[in-house]
Image (cartoon, rainbow, N blue to C red):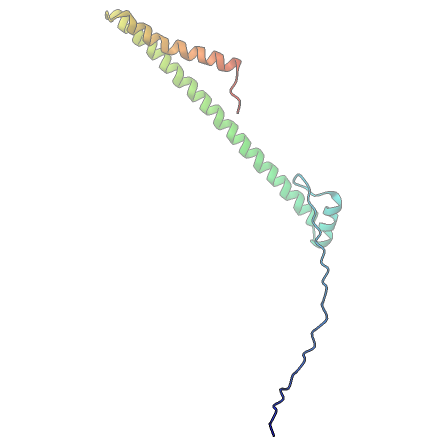
Length: 134
């Protein structure tokens, strides 16, 4: 007699496949403020939510205006500084040209020194007519 071993087989019941239907809702808007209907919804969820969002938008606008104002002031200062430095360079070149002419230096030296401010003026006139594109 031969012995047969029987293995016990257990069948594990597999749970039925579960289907999860998820939906994702996304909303977007351009600008600092959402549409009025969304503001009302914020107000329902968060106490004074719409007012807080309005305050945030107003603060952001004030901040942006302050930064733009500071940038414009800095640009004006840089332009004035450049005009002063250009004027000083031009007057120095004309003065040095007069000095070299009075001391008997070759005429080419005086012409070279005078050509520096003349070229600067020509460049300024050309740039005024055709401003550089940024």
